[in-house]
Image 1 (tube, rainbow, N blue to C red):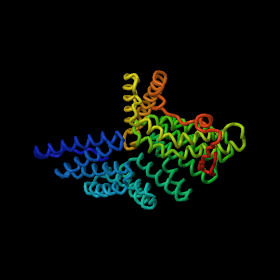
Image 2 (image 1 turned 30 degrees about the vertical axis):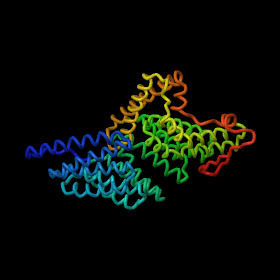
Image 3 (image 1 turned 90 degrees about the vertical axis):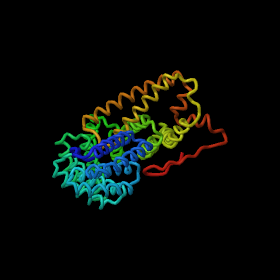
Image 4 (image 1 turned 45 degrees about the vertical axis):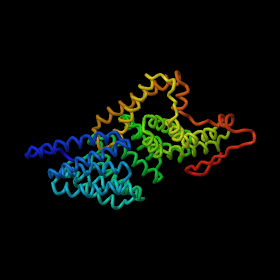
Length: 427
């Protein structure tokens, strides 16, 4: 976002227009923070209103800032070309007004879009334009971020040593600025490069450093990602039990995170991003089954497969028009709604990396943890007092024994395939 500017003298009408523009802009940002598909569309409408008003009074600096924010929302909605349209309108305005802060963040945002679109060289071009500007304005956090992003692209392109060069420039900047979140991401990226280079112990060393930090920061999604990375390395080293311990810890965090998101759209979108965790888990269980066929790893793999595939469908059924709340204590339902709304708002805020200081992020993580614990305690009360509601609201897929006893008869078999990271499994 752009920096604040001093109010310019003008007519009463102009000042009223400016005040209306500021109100619309702030309302748009508040809707942006909510993070649901509906609120993001509403945020665009409010910011478009602010944009028209800023254009009316000729305030090009805030016009550029508003365009940049509209672009960011379209990017979050997955409409990358629309995001580029707004960023490309914002960029020359920031340059014309000499607003280097606005210019550098727009350049970085354009780089992110091209990165997401797979146009890696164009992404690097824009990152390279933003890098000297971050240095010029003395923003070492932004400089470290861009160096990390460039390194990640070179890693994707297979230029591992070049990637390490950029990561090793980024890491000390994050440490010098106390940016533990940035340090976590860079350590993970360094670990990934060493893993790809076959230097497994160096990969583990960097992942373990990242894991310690991510727990201090309280970023549960980052902790799950790091545990998943460690599980991959341990599996490759033949340490199947260590791999199992780490992937199970990662899956547990994912299950906790997804229950905090009240919006079905957001929950399904988040779950889609972590499907590889479940595929790896199933793959690992089947490898363990080969070495220990009597331990029940195959049955557990089937259950995990069912949980990964059926969960969103079960939740959608639970949120359908069925009157599942009949007979449930209204006070418990009100508490549940309030907690879920608070969690959704907090989780949406956490998904916006542009907002907040390190202290703000830690406070937010603590708030999410507290609300999550309260929701778990409330869910236990609901399950005890209203089992019918709990069965529909908090559904679980059937286990193998339940499938055998409740679904299949003596003349029927169930054959299920799972596409793992190393093979296709039939159960």
